[in-house]
Image (tube, rainbow over all chains, first blue to last red; front, side):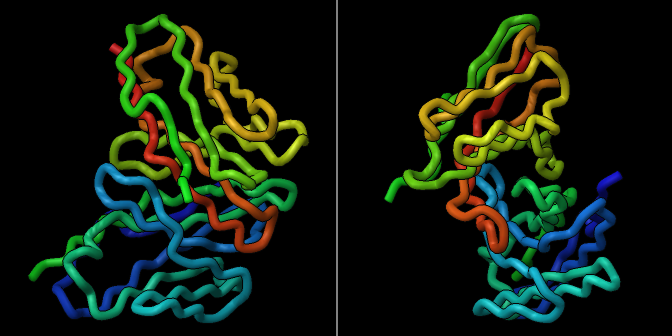
Length: 111
Length: 115
Protein backbone atom coordinates (compact mmCIF):
# COMPACT_ATOMS: atom_id res chain seq x y z
CA UNK A 1 0.00 0.00 0.00
CA UNK A 2 0.91 3.65 -0.01
CA UNK A 3 2.65 5.07 3.04
CA UNK A 4 4.61 8.15 3.97
CA UNK A 5 6.39 8.21 7.31
CA UNK A 6 7.41 11.37 9.12
CA UNK A 7 8.00 12.14 12.81
CA UNK A 8 4.86 13.15 14.67
CA UNK A 9 6.43 15.98 16.66
CA UNK A 10 9.57 18.09 16.68
CA UNK A 11 10.53 20.85 19.11
CA UNK A 12 13.21 23.47 18.49
CA UNK A 13 14.18 26.93 19.71
CA UNK A 14 14.00 30.22 17.86
CA UNK A 15 16.93 30.77 15.55
CA UNK A 16 17.77 27.08 15.33
CA UNK A 17 17.73 24.74 12.32
CA UNK A 18 15.36 21.79 12.14
CA UNK A 19 15.10 18.93 9.66
CA UNK A 20 11.87 17.01 9.10
CA UNK A 21 12.38 13.68 7.38
CA UNK A 22 9.96 11.83 5.17
CA UNK A 23 10.28 8.31 3.82
CA UNK A 24 7.77 7.03 1.35
CA UNK A 25 6.58 3.77 -0.09
CA UNK A 26 4.23 4.32 -3.00
CA UNK A 27 3.25 2.44 -6.12
CA UNK A 28 4.47 5.29 -8.31
CA UNK A 29 6.46 8.46 -7.81
CA UNK A 30 6.05 11.74 -9.63
CA UNK A 31 7.40 14.19 -7.09
CA UNK A 32 7.54 15.05 -3.39
CA UNK A 33 5.86 18.19 -2.05
CA UNK A 34 5.77 19.85 1.34
CA UNK A 35 2.85 21.74 2.83
CA UNK A 36 2.54 23.84 5.96
CA UNK A 37 -0.64 24.00 8.01
CA UNK A 38 -1.21 26.28 10.99
CA UNK A 39 -3.81 25.20 13.54
CA UNK A 40 -7.27 25.77 12.11
CA UNK A 41 -5.84 26.88 8.78
CA UNK A 42 -5.60 25.52 5.28
CA UNK A 43 -2.49 23.70 4.05
CA UNK A 44 -0.21 25.97 2.03
CA UNK A 45 2.41 24.86 -0.47
CA UNK A 46 6.06 25.18 0.55
CA UNK A 47 8.18 23.28 -1.94
CA UNK A 48 8.40 20.58 -4.57
CA UNK A 49 11.14 18.14 -5.60
CA UNK A 50 10.71 16.26 -8.85
CA UNK A 51 14.37 15.32 -9.20
CA UNK A 52 17.10 14.39 -6.74
CA UNK A 53 18.82 17.18 -4.93
CA UNK A 54 18.20 20.28 -2.90
CA UNK A 55 15.67 23.01 -3.63
CA UNK A 56 16.04 26.25 -1.68
CA UNK A 57 13.37 28.86 -1.07
CA UNK A 58 14.43 31.47 1.43
CA UNK A 59 14.73 29.97 4.90
CA UNK A 60 13.24 26.68 3.72
CA UNK A 61 14.99 23.97 1.70
CA UNK A 62 13.80 20.58 0.59
CA UNK A 63 15.81 17.55 -0.45
CA UNK A 64 14.97 14.40 -2.35
CA UNK A 65 16.74 11.10 -2.92
CA UNK A 66 14.60 8.91 -5.14
CA UNK A 67 16.92 5.92 -4.79
CA UNK A 68 16.38 6.03 -1.01
CA UNK A 69 12.67 6.95 -1.22
CA UNK A 70 13.55 9.74 1.18
CA UNK A 71 13.25 13.47 1.46
CA UNK A 72 13.48 16.16 4.07
CA UNK A 73 12.41 19.69 4.76
CA UNK A 74 15.02 21.95 6.34
CA UNK A 75 13.90 25.06 8.16
CA UNK A 76 16.59 27.58 9.09
CA UNK A 77 16.56 30.59 11.40
CA UNK A 78 13.41 29.32 13.04
CA UNK A 79 10.80 31.87 14.01
CA UNK A 80 7.85 31.50 16.36
CA UNK A 81 5.49 31.77 13.38
CA UNK A 82 7.00 28.56 11.99
CA UNK A 83 5.13 26.62 14.67
CA UNK A 84 2.75 24.56 12.55
CA UNK A 85 2.25 21.10 11.11
CA UNK A 86 4.31 20.11 8.09
CA UNK A 87 3.16 17.46 5.65
CA UNK A 88 5.11 15.64 3.00
CA UNK A 89 3.05 14.49 0.04
CA UNK A 90 3.75 12.32 -2.98
CA UNK A 91 2.10 12.42 -6.35
CA UNK A 92 1.97 8.69 -7.00
CA UNK A 93 -0.22 8.50 -10.05
CA UNK A 94 1.00 9.52 -13.47
CA UNK A 95 -2.53 9.84 -14.80
CA UNK A 96 -3.79 12.04 -12.00
CA UNK A 97 -2.50 14.80 -9.79
CA UNK A 98 -3.91 13.85 -6.44
CA UNK A 99 -1.48 13.70 -3.54
CA UNK A 100 -0.90 11.05 -0.90
CA UNK A 101 -0.04 12.81 2.36
CA UNK A 102 2.02 11.78 5.35
CA UNK A 103 0.53 12.06 8.81
CA UNK A 104 2.23 15.38 9.45
CA UNK A 105 4.94 16.64 11.79
CA UNK A 106 3.91 19.12 14.43
CA UNK A 107 6.73 21.64 14.91
CA UNK A 108 6.82 23.64 18.11
CA UNK A 109 9.22 26.57 18.19
CA UNK A 110 10.12 27.80 21.65
CA UNK A 111 11.67 31.15 22.59
CA UNK B 1 -7.38 37.55 -6.51
CA UNK B 2 -9.79 35.32 -4.65
CA UNK B 3 -8.60 32.03 -3.34
CA UNK B 4 -10.47 28.76 -3.02
CA UNK B 5 -13.67 29.21 -1.05
CA UNK B 6 -15.78 26.59 0.67
CA UNK B 7 -19.16 26.62 2.28
CA UNK B 8 -20.40 26.12 4.85
CA UNK B 9 -17.43 26.60 7.16
CA UNK B 10 -19.08 24.43 9.78
CA UNK B 11 -21.85 21.87 9.50
CA UNK B 12 -23.45 19.90 12.30
CA UNK B 13 -25.84 17.19 11.20
CA UNK B 14 -27.62 14.24 12.67
CA UNK B 15 -26.61 10.73 11.80
CA UNK B 16 -28.51 9.50 8.77
CA UNK B 17 -29.01 12.92 7.17
CA UNK B 18 -27.53 13.95 3.83
CA UNK B 19 -25.12 16.88 3.54
CA UNK B 20 -23.78 18.94 0.65
CA UNK B 21 -20.45 20.72 0.79
CA UNK B 22 -19.54 23.35 -1.78
CA UNK B 23 -16.21 24.39 -3.27
CA UNK B 24 -15.44 27.39 -5.49
CA UNK B 25 -11.98 26.91 -7.01
CA UNK B 26 -9.66 29.63 -8.19
CA UNK B 27 -10.78 30.96 -11.55
CA UNK B 28 -8.89 29.32 -14.39
CA UNK B 29 -7.76 26.30 -12.39
CA UNK B 30 -8.66 23.18 -14.33
CA UNK B 31 -7.93 20.66 -11.59
CA UNK B 32 -10.03 20.32 -8.44
CA UNK B 33 -9.51 17.95 -5.53
CA UNK B 34 -11.40 16.92 -2.42
CA UNK B 35 -9.54 15.68 0.64
CA UNK B 36 -10.64 14.75 4.14
CA UNK B 37 -8.67 15.44 7.31
CA UNK B 38 -9.49 13.89 10.66
CA UNK B 39 -8.28 15.61 13.82
CA UNK B 40 -4.51 15.54 14.07
CA UNK B 41 -4.16 13.42 10.95
CA UNK B 42 -2.89 13.84 7.42
CA UNK B 43 -5.07 14.51 4.44
CA UNK B 44 -6.90 11.66 2.75
CA UNK B 45 -7.60 11.98 -0.96
CA UNK B 46 -11.25 11.56 -1.97
CA UNK B 47 -11.85 12.62 -5.59
CA UNK B 48 -10.14 14.53 -8.40
CA UNK B 49 -11.55 16.45 -11.37
CA UNK B 50 -9.40 17.49 -14.32
CA UNK B 51 -11.01 19.60 -17.01
CA UNK B 52 -13.79 17.72 -18.79
CA UNK B 53 -12.36 14.28 -18.08
CA UNK B 54 -14.18 11.72 -16.01
CA UNK B 55 -13.35 12.26 -12.33
CA UNK B 56 -11.00 9.95 -10.45
CA UNK B 57 -13.19 8.62 -7.64
CA UNK B 58 -10.67 6.10 -6.33
CA UNK B 59 -10.44 7.74 -2.90
CA UNK B 60 -14.13 7.81 -2.06
CA UNK B 61 -14.57 5.65 1.06
CA UNK B 62 -18.04 4.34 0.24
CA UNK B 63 -20.92 4.75 -2.20
CA UNK B 64 -22.50 7.21 0.22
CA UNK B 65 -19.99 9.75 -1.07
CA UNK B 66 -20.35 11.45 -4.44
CA UNK B 67 -19.20 14.65 -6.05
CA UNK B 68 -19.88 16.64 -9.15
CA UNK B 69 -18.33 19.62 -10.82
CA UNK B 70 -20.58 21.82 -12.89
CA UNK B 71 -19.29 23.83 -15.84
CA UNK B 72 -15.71 23.01 -14.94
CA UNK B 73 -15.90 25.29 -11.93
CA UNK B 74 -17.93 24.87 -8.74
CA UNK B 75 -17.93 21.44 -7.12
CA UNK B 76 -20.31 19.85 -4.64
CA UNK B 77 -19.41 16.92 -2.40
CA UNK B 78 -22.46 15.02 -1.18
CA UNK B 79 -22.49 12.58 1.70
CA UNK B 80 -25.66 10.54 2.04
CA UNK B 81 -26.88 8.91 5.24
CA UNK B 82 -24.05 10.43 7.25
CA UNK B 83 -22.31 8.36 9.91
CA UNK B 84 -20.32 9.51 12.92
CA UNK B 85 -17.09 8.37 11.29
CA UNK B 86 -17.71 10.93 8.55
CA UNK B 87 -16.92 13.69 11.04
CA UNK B 88 -13.82 15.48 9.74
CA UNK B 89 -12.67 18.60 7.96
CA UNK B 90 -13.34 18.39 4.24
CA UNK B 91 -10.80 20.34 2.22
CA UNK B 92 -11.06 21.35 -1.38
CA UNK B 93 -8.04 22.34 -3.47
CA UNK B 94 -7.46 23.49 -7.02
CA UNK B 95 -4.44 23.72 -9.25
CA UNK B 96 -3.62 25.34 -12.57
CA UNK B 97 -1.37 22.84 -14.26
CA UNK B 98 -1.62 19.15 -14.78
CA UNK B 99 1.49 17.27 -13.77
CA UNK B 100 4.85 18.57 -12.71
CA UNK B 101 4.93 21.07 -9.88
CA UNK B 102 1.16 20.97 -9.44
CA UNK B 103 1.01 23.42 -6.55
CA UNK B 104 -2.37 22.90 -4.96
CA UNK B 105 -4.25 25.80 -3.37
CA UNK B 106 -6.47 24.77 -0.50
CA UNK B 107 -9.68 26.28 0.74
CA UNK B 108 -10.37 26.82 4.45
CA UNK B 109 -12.34 23.61 4.70
CA UNK B 110 -15.74 22.59 5.98
CA UNK B 111 -15.78 21.11 9.48
CA UNK B 112 -18.43 18.40 9.49
CA UNK B 113 -19.72 17.04 12.77
CA UNK B 114 -22.16 14.13 12.72
CA UNK B 115 -24.02 13.69 15.99
